[in-house]
Image (tube, rainbow, N blue to C red; front, side, top):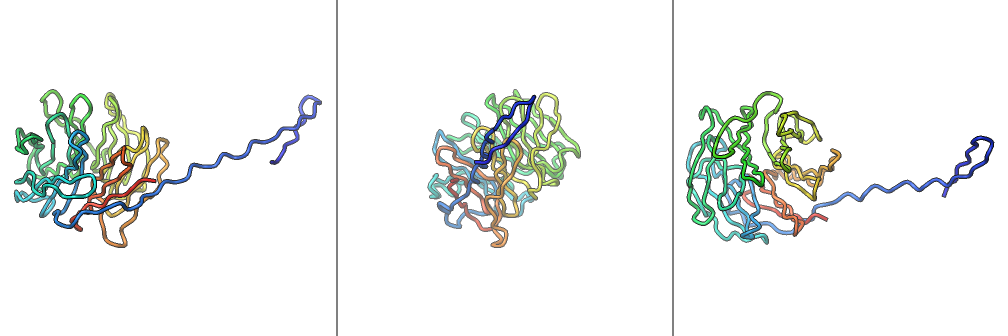
Length: 287
């Protein structure tokens, strides 16, 4: 251990410097399982802890086409496809959110509420205007307020107390894709045009950039209380800490494997990645 000699007010004081605190060891992802390839362009995956099941949205066609071929699958947390076409007839379904007995799914130009007991659509809300809308991700707070991104038109919709409205819009959103509501006053946004994770104050709508350099940001999932996983659709996943430091923890770009809207099962420390054109989910253990 080094020591430092300090002369202060005529007194000679020998101070032992404290050793430099080591930085925490970076985490890593280790492949745990993958499904078979019977999924069809899986875009988003969502874990339902009450049913211990993963919901998977399958585009099954072009991502912006009203073809009615999209569907939702059910997959077990160990990678078995238990119901390939649990509900069908959707249009390029993407982001999903759960509240009570409803699964909210974006359906290109509308938000669809599906009864989780029956798999039947109960209600829909349309973007304004419908033409050109590209609704993408969904996040829901504990009170049931739903936020939906339209990343082609720089809009965020809100469904609160059954009122559907454009809650925020403008170029400052920079192509909002992934959404995650945190507590009662913060909304995280993956801004695809910036490759950035941004935070919006729900009360003031002030925007703060947390981290950037992540290309086509897609899914956002909490890891711990204040850390997050952020996916880049091109095939990367980043771990972002509360103070904005980011670490690349997955890169499948050379294998041309995408990483779309991810899910994280905290109790299992399991990150699930939809591979889009590869038609399967791949799960990784966070270590």
